[in-house]
Image (cartoon, rainbow, N blue to C red; front, side, top):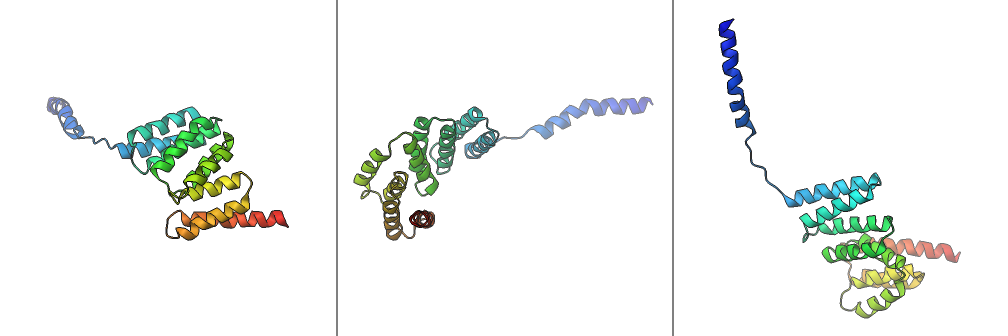
Length: 192
């Protein structure tokens, strides 16, 4: 019995050494991975309708990874939360930043147009985008959506179709063409 207790005491005293040896490890902090995780937490909070927590998570995601293409998603998500809780003036900057980070996502244009509509700025933005559409072909996408929001579906279809014809190889073009088809169907239903 003495031998057993002696061996047990020796093993017990050596345990922290063995345990410590196994726990020493380096931990690499990856801001891109953490930004992705904070964005996902924000999305979960939105689903649970915990909007303040979602806003904070999206802001953390943006601050961890401010200059990457993925940040456009975080800005867009933050803007959608602001729109949901009734702050389109805060959402406006988010949607503009999303388009600045990545301008080939059709949803970002639609969200920005919705924001302009909530702020009663459709007509002002139509005149602004009309004057700058030659500088950037993607401005036609925004202009077409603004025409739609203003109730001028024919002009929206024409403008979006001009863009789709001029830029057939862009990633955004299939979404624009699908939206044109949807507008044509809506226009056809209202005329019958």
